[in-house]
Amino acid sequence: MKYVYAGYSKSGTKSIAQAFKLLGFRVCDFEETMLFHAAQWIEILTATTTNEKRYKLIHEMYKDFDVVCDAPGYFFWQEILEVFPEAKCVFYQRKDEDTGCFC
Image (cartoon, rainbow, N blue to C red):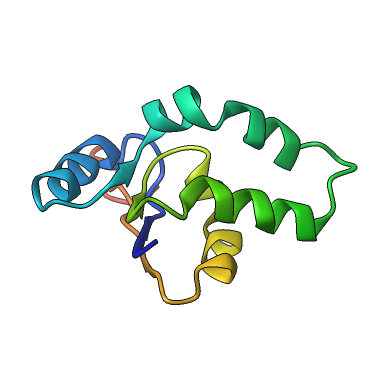
C-alpha cells in the first residue's frame, strides 16, 4: 500500500482512481471492495471483532494494492495507515459551490 485517498464520495474518488490506474498503480476502488472484500468488511464492522483481527483483515485486503480509494476505505484511513505506516494519505475536501465553504 502506497496511498490512501481519504476524500469522501463525490470529491473526485473516481477521477483519482482513474489517474492512479493510468500511472500504473493497482487501485482498490469501491467496485473492487464490493467484489472482493465485502465479507472482510462485514467482519471488520462486527462489534465482537478485535482490533488485532481488524488489522489482520485490513492487511490481507490491501497487501496487493498500491492505492485505496472511496468507501469504506476513507472511513478507516487511520487504521489503514497503522497497518501500512509507509503509505501516504491524500485528502481532498470538496468546495460547496453555493456557499463557497468546504463541505
